[in-house]
Amino acid sequence: MAFEAQGTILEIMPLKKVGQNEFPIQQFIVELYREKDRPQPIPFEFKGKRANALNDGNFSVGDEVKLAFDFDGNRWEGDNVVRYFCSNNVWEIQLISSASKPKQTNGQQHDDRNPPPITDADLPFNDDIPF
Image (cartoon, rainbow, N blue to C red; front, top):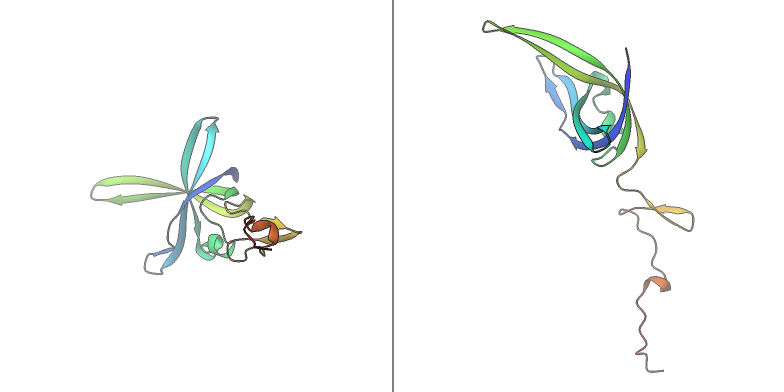
């Protein structure tokens, strides 16, 4: 069964490798809104060959995203204790809006790495010219 959710990325944890086979897992937190003024920080994760999806898609903290996910449950026994674990296993992510929206100048996109050219209109007016 698949579920969908939409929210804002709050945190992206470093990629980790678990177990003897070093299985890759990328965890991240998305803030969902169940009620209007009640944010819900929910942990999600990409596993296996999807573990680099956030890096490959250039996602960052503050991005609004739409997720398709399912639940993954596990049972663990040890020291006379039984514990159950659940994770939200994401299999698709879509960018709704970026936290760092590029600026538009003359139909061209510019960001911090590629700033727009400076024009005369951008310079401060100085009327102290002697001629």
